[in-house]
Amino acid sequence: MYAQSQIPLVYDKEDTGSRNFPLETPSINELPEIHTLPDPFAWADGHGTLTDFKDWERRRSEISWQLQYYELGIKPKISKDSIEAIIEKDTLRIVIRNNGKKLALNALVKYPEGKGPFPAIIGIGLPTGSLPEELFHKRNIAQIVFNFEQIMSHTQKRGHEPINQLYPEQTSN
Image 1: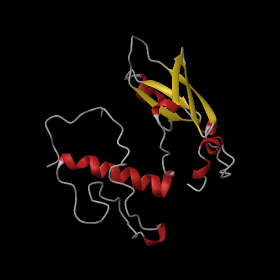
Image 2: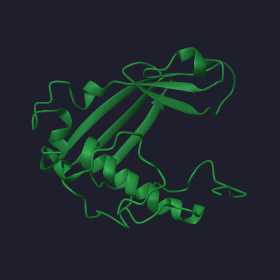
Image 3: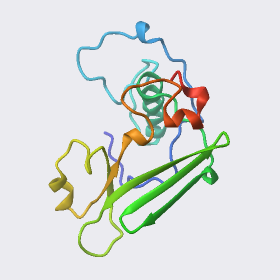
């Protein structure tokens, strides 16, 4: 039903959902109570389900928007020119500039044996997040350790976190 002969493994562009969204989103108090996992193929407006792969881009945008709206905060729009990224040996260095400020991030990269390029997983706090490192090591997948506190600490002091210097308008996210 959802099969297609050639589904891309990597998309040539990030789907930001900007063509279709923001969609009309009910407040958290207006959401229905759901006792099971929601159907990932059901349209956000409740009018049916996705039945053709060509519609997946739109549904993926809906899911992205809902995650941003209800859980993560709205992703800021930035140009590629405002991001600088370089790898020096085992360290990924990223500098983001916006609002006359800059935020520098460093992440340890653990490479597998052999010659790359390698696929990579980004783990928050640990090389592979909550998953066992061995799962990725034996598959020759590089591990990138992302230190979340470089962006926001767990104290959630809105307006005083490093990311808020770049995007002060998003402190209510």
